[in-house]
Length: 526
Image (cartoon, rainbow, N blue to C red):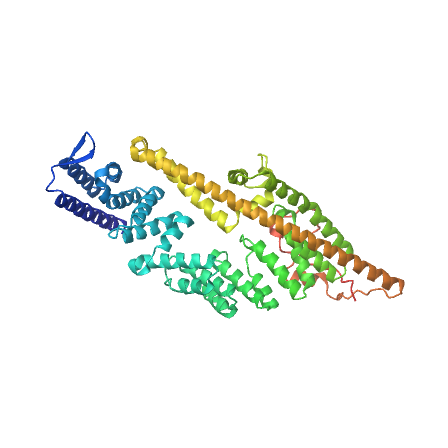
């Protein structure tokens, strides 16, 4: 199939070049010479020879020399009117050479030229190239110019999907859902389109529609493994839908289906804890906290979970435990808040934010960190996993790989086109790092604001704790001690038989223990 496509591309390029040669020759038959600058003369036969040579090279699949010849032609001032055509063909050559980012610049120039003959083709090519690169800037530019009817059927799924993404990002949820619905079943974009369509409905408060779509996605992946990311993501979406619908027990049950060896399990456990709190299942929520706050997850940024744990202790009047959790929250996240504030106050350049993230990316675990970080590891880890940052980092890797390929291409690197390509890629790499730095800065500012709010909430929770202690003391003085209300008739063996295990908690946690805890504490309230 790839061989057939390659032949078709060669025929298209040949046809374009042949038409271009004939049009150029027909338009210049009355002129023997073309003057480009005072004192310089270019013979018509020389230009025709170069075009013919470029055509022959393209026909024989010699894309690199063909691209170099076209690059030399595109700079000729006497070919200014024909420049859009040459740039389009040059872009096609660069795509064949797998230099997608450099090719994209050629297609953008064609689109900006407004040439009616090539603008639609250039938009189509730019859309495909931007999609392969994952470049949001180019995608937004291409899609803004798109008329879907101009695209062949094989590419329409990609266009509808990208239009949906842009609409979703702009919070145009109805339009986003409509665009995603046009992605055909069986397309490589179908799973993500189905998920995003469900999310658009959920954001638009059409919860039942979202539930139906998430369930449809789960049914489509029924034969996949339990850790299949598309299936797990759909299960998470389904659980969140029932949470939004305030059907706590159903949400809790679906969250419990997320496999422990999937990276979304930790998020599921935390969200399930909220559902348990809302459903007044306090002991179950405390069981989750044993896992959430184990040493295995000490490098996770989850400040809200500690306050959630404190609130559960408040509901069951465990004030001593509540005091410990609030103290742990302050001890852990007060230094984080100070360091974030200090970094934001002392760093104004976007590149400094990228460089700090880059240090974190050089290691995989906190204990492996041998470079000096100004920001806490857990903060940078959290930011690196944000969707916009992760996508931009992936794009940065692609253009760095493209640059490395050109650097190692031998003679092409020293050619005019090779030098131009490296300049283009260096500029794009620098701009992308600046963009990522801006994203890091924005996420840090959000974290700073979030921590400020959480510390205020911690103060309110502590105030409620003091009031609770005073009320307990008042009742004791009045001779009305608080009873224990837990059902003590359930033996520990009951929990073991139902899949729970018990460990002597001495600060040592192993992955296979995570999620096996069951809280047996007693309630202290009336």
